[in-house]
Image (cartoon, rainbow, N blue to C red; front, top):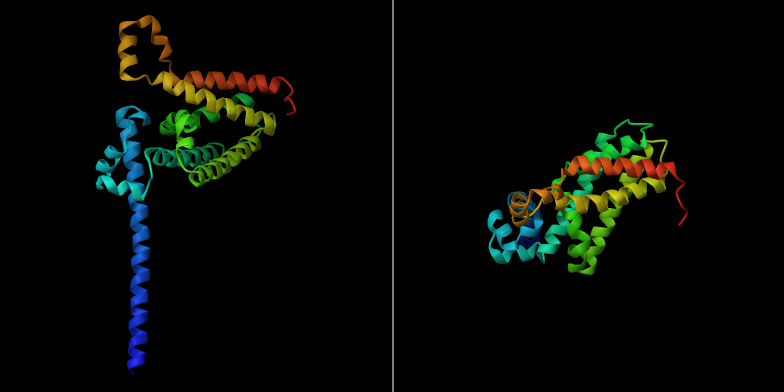
Length: 237
């Protein structure tokens, strides 16, 4: 009788322990999501991810300042997580945008790329910071996870674009995406000047052209790039 009681008691303890662990994992996921949401909000309100700090993120998320280290080792790791989510969001946006699309022209492919990537302003901003600092400021395993997931999204993006056109090869599509990433990273920063530069442009209108209209310029350049890529033979590397 005593043995049965102890077995039943042990089973109860195990069940409670498992339940608590599952609940803790769920809470951890929620707090991680809260921190990411706070970082997104701050980047939007403050004019870019360069102005995001861990202290401000934890305060907005309602956590103790020391608690953030349980979820992200650094600001760079938190922002890299946002960039990883950005790749997934761009992949999904392109898949939806090109659903059932076939035989598109290179110019139409360029427009689809521009339309979808510019719908993700935080991702556009992060594309500057990922190679500049974020990837190099996290540990190897976190960098590996980012590369694994971002390249998986990239591969799907290439497949989706190539399937939507009969006028571009896989290599040409990859080159167009490479141009997209470089142009987006540069043009986003130029078209969203800091407060100092905005004040300077107000004082010196002749320089204000530098703060160009982001999406139209990106679209024109990508169309020109797509036209050029398909007008010449793609070199073999």
